[in-house]
Length: 445
Image (cartoon, rainbow, N blue to C red):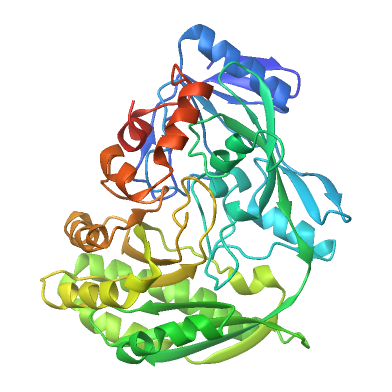
């Protein structure tokens, strides 16, 4: 393998293929680069353009689509990590784009600070998570990208560009969820607040009751979500609300037993059995859905919002107008019950307020998210196709990092600001240096 080193960063001929976390996407780049600064990244982008190679950046590979796949230059942001500065006057933190969310959360907590909301895992890089629209659940607090106050990115001509609500606002409106199509993000500034406590209340509940009370549960809780176990009438609900304390974390042994032993170890074994013997899945689901009991605990945000996810899977998620939630969920349940499908993973349901980001799944509308999963290696096409048919009938918007079959013609119809985004892309990357086959499908050429 040939290697060229430039300062602390490096460039090398690619040896083995790149694979995503789920293992369903593989690509063979010509070379991989690990720049240690925005200046080194800009030089690599200019070099790639001169060589006629396209450029894509990968984080931890948690997207289930080929959004980051490339046959050109693969940028690994491993050296673009760490907090640049904390501004306690403005209550912001500026962080390098390759920083894992886990490291950011731990560092912020050490400083007595926190993000307002986050997703349910924190393995992704900050740029990877925000560029694909990663979100949690919340009545009034939106996605991670909605918490961005400024962005720095390198564009196709090697220019280092900054943007915010006041500086290049038209770029800022799109680049917070840029899909890797506008440039390579090198740093971002997030709004933060003093660290606070959340009380989580997890409680089993019947499907019909969750559906009947869905609007009330959403309205009365800062953060509400639930999981429905297919082939059963059982759900597990989670309500997270701000608390005055005192902190009451999960006991170490009890937390390990439910979050690691049951939710990862036993669940992995159950999924493996279901993949090998599909007719056993309904019985396994009935047992699994009763395994988790009610519990309440109080802790700092990232320890409540996030959970370990060690069982690998494929996922499809659609964002629907929130008023369509209960109808779509009833249709989904009826479809599973009326089909020969055997579904081993629970269905996840979350919400978000409307935001102002051009290609956010919650852009301009109150949103419900419905996510379906299947254990890695399980045939998924039949289930996902049937789910997608229901979701698109309600004007659903697919999560940018999760499996779907939609194209630019469909997406232009569900995103009022789609043309605004593609026009900006034409200006910033007219030669599609940051393009690939996936972006050609979802954004057009």
